[in-house]
Structures are given as structure tokens and as C-alpha cells.
Image (cartoon, rainbow, N blue to C red; front, side):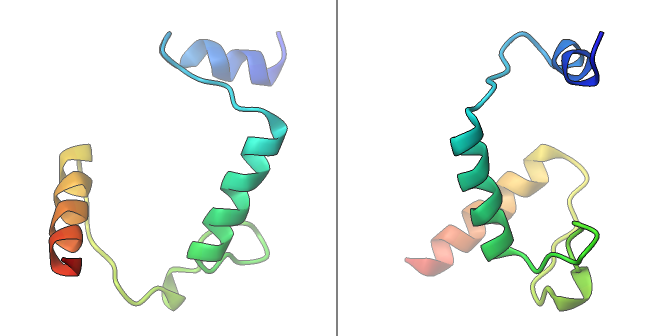
Length: 71
């Protein structure tokens, strides 16, 4: 079994596999949003606003607060 197939199997049944074109769009948007080092990791030393999240709920709360500030 190929590594890609193993990854798909590890995900739940509701996964969506995007086209190469859509994947490319997402990667470009990600790289435009975050400073990415040569190794492909986010260079966190260049990110000004950081939030600690331990659970998905924590991330949702940060997004809601930031969204409310923009209004």
C-alpha cells in the first residue's frame, strides 16, 4: 500500500481529497498568509500575533474574538 493510501485510510470517512489545482491554490494562500522557511515550516519568529490552542474549541474562540474586533 502506498503512503498516500495509508494516510487516506488513517483519516475518517468524511475526508475530501482535493484536486491538484485546488491543492496548489491552498498552498499559495497559506504561503501568502504565513512566513514559510526554506524547510517548509512556518517561521514562528516572524509571526507577530500568536495564540496558544490546546483544542479545536480554543481556535474557534480566537477566530470569533478576532472577527468581532473587525466589526
